[in-house]
Image (cartoon, rainbow, N blue to C red; front, side, top):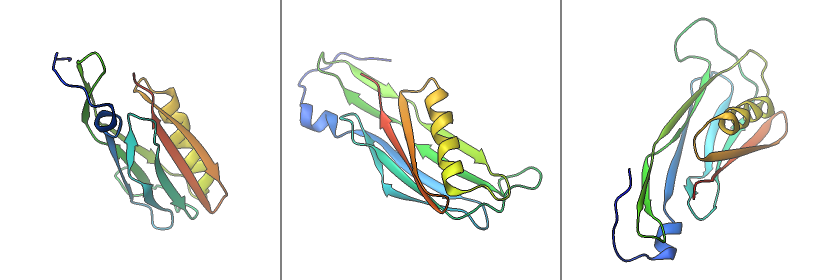
Length: 137
């Protein structure tokens, strides 16, 4: 949904973006936010995953890690307003799954999705990062 509006301030609009929130429901693999905003101007949000997963037994939220990218709006140079939907991503973990394996799984899921985001995984078996960038125009 796009609306026509007036004054465009590129610095203000490029600083807008999705807030990155993360949570772990695994006993031994954790997640935290290093950089909490994925901006329209290209600054990535970064999540840090640590440890080896205990994994998931059965259904429910136990043994999962979740990423949430919030809803946001920004004005484009032509004066229209883009409304970007939020995205909740839950990943079920396997017993023994390393931090890097989890980071790569999140990156692959994000990159395969139709949402305007791309991700890159990096790190080691014990500590890995997922950098998420906004790719919309």
